[in-house]
Image 1 (cartoon, rainbow, N blue to C red):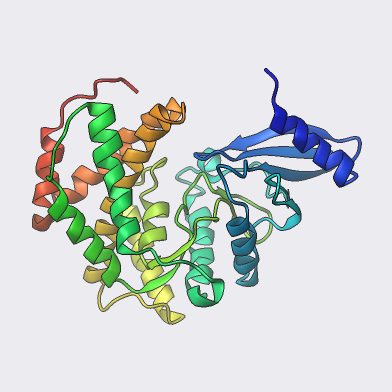
Image 2: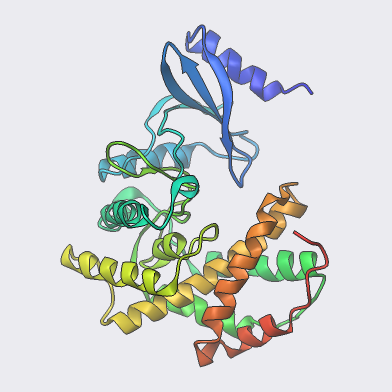
Length: 326
């Protein structure tokens, strides 16, 4: 089928940028309308981003890339841009995605690097970076995706006002935490193993000023890769100790930090379950349905550990079997 945007991208590279004799191949897609292509030329590799302006705004990517690089984070450098067409040319962080290479043997090193980079991020100034707040409205809107797309569209059930109390508790917990720079999708699909300054960090354009445990949940209770609880807690408490040493605010105690982490995970995994269902029905991307059982397992595990989340635990117990098989 004709692909007008692909043809326009080729013209931009060759006619506007003067890049000749290159080979353009798909690099990856993500859970948005953006596409990425690897530009091979004379033994070097660059990344071309195609972000349709009607669907995606490149400006946050450019702005946050500059801010994150100023903190010492390894993110792509924006080499060329065409905002009118929605094209960017970026440095290439390689093909070794954390999700594809992680195992029990290399996880301590790879996660150690990722957690060290996260401390650099959280040590930054969200105001200087110009990050918008992860406020009550956004937190609530995200959880509504679970009710609308997973429960309503995927399972075909309407629970009415059930979970309103739970949503309120989760928002309050998020907002009472210290607020720091948050990547918002800091997980194994968006981290690349690099030879220097590992990891390379992708998909940061939605960064916000938000809860200190949010990116930790994204990484340690990854929607795409689960780890044993004891290992997660070891990473979590080690992070808290090292973060406190560099004056990142981490709460009064390990117990408080764990509750923040657990409840933040519930908010994120409600959101993720809804997004995975929406990707299937709205965007024609069924591949994420297979990850819903993992996010639901996270939800059930935490909901049963806290009496305040009994409403959620009951809703999860009462869920019917999915009407559509992943």
